[in-house]
Each structure stands twice: as structure tokens, then as C-alpha cells.
Length: 166
Image (cartoon, rainbow, N blue to C red):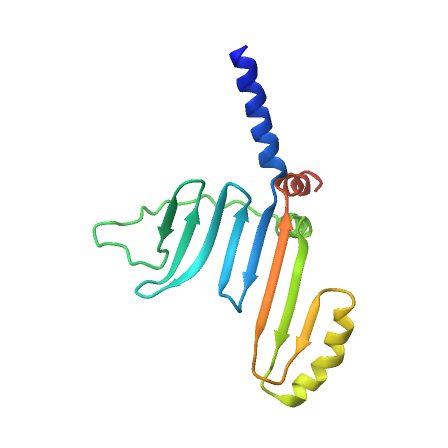
């Protein structure tokens, strides 16, 4: 009886992992750049005073910080391994990457831009007006603001399907 309950709970957890939303958010105005798996983890890139850049990992109950640009200590050396050269099929890798990108849906796309040149801004205005009706929200301003918000969402099951369909 206990094994059956444990098996059902494990199956439900695996189903949750397959269907949980995966979000990628880029927001320049608020300096938010993160990837989030709802209810499990959130990985974000943020600025830091001393190290310039740090990666913040929030999991269920803990928070970790990683500093990818930190210099290695003198005692730590990387082991150099010789790799055998394999022919990589660029065409199939490109198709696979394109299928993975297609599995994401654009939830929010906002672009508010000022090029600094009023003539270029005037040339962008009709193109952005056309794109406004079909793709997202595009604006041209003459005030010096540059803002971009991009929110992509997918589910792990859709990403797995994109690998299988090739």
C-alpha cells in the first residue's frame, strides 16, 4: 500500500515537471533578466558592486549566488583534455535549435525606442505601426527612452516534442 502511494506521488511529480510553465523574461527598464520554472527554481542575472555580475539561483527554500567573472585562484588549474574531433552536422543542429525556439510562445513583446536621430525615428514609425497590429507593442519616442520587455513561455513537454519531431 505504501509503495503504491509512493509510486502515484512520483508519477504526479513527473507529470508536474512536464507541464509546469517555463518562463524567460527580459525587461530592460527594470533590469530583470531571468529564467523561471514555476514553483521550483528561478535563475536570474543581476549587477553587483564588486564583482560586476552575479547569477542568483532561487530554489524552493534556499538562495545561491554565483560569480561567473571571478578570477580563479592560482592553485586551481583546469585540466586540459584532448577531445576527439567529430563531424558535427550543422544543418541538423540548426534545425533542432529552430524547433526548440518555435516551441516558445511570446506572451509579451514591448519595444519603446529612440534612436537619437529624429529622421531615423520618423522612418521607423510606419514600420512599427504596421508591426503593432500583428506582433506586439512597438513604439517610437523622441524623448531618449529605450525600453524592451520580452516574455517567452513554454512547457518542458513541448521542448521534448520539438526534439522528437526532427
